[in-house]
Length: 88
Image (cartoon, rainbow, N blue to C red):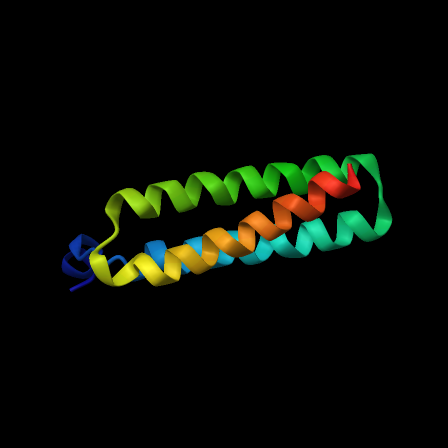
């Protein structure tokens, strides 16, 4: 049963991972911009880049149903990137 379940790929996990990466990036950017600590800003930039890569992977594997969700994630990530650039 576990082997069979491991072979099933629904895309849900990919979308959940994107959501988690974006949320993490948003939180890290928020903390870094409040502290204005250069190291935290660098870590936040890395989190944003990781989220971008995860989002790009999900876009490649997306079904038509995922488009709105991924667009929302892109918008959130764009806002976080803008906030980070302003702080830097």
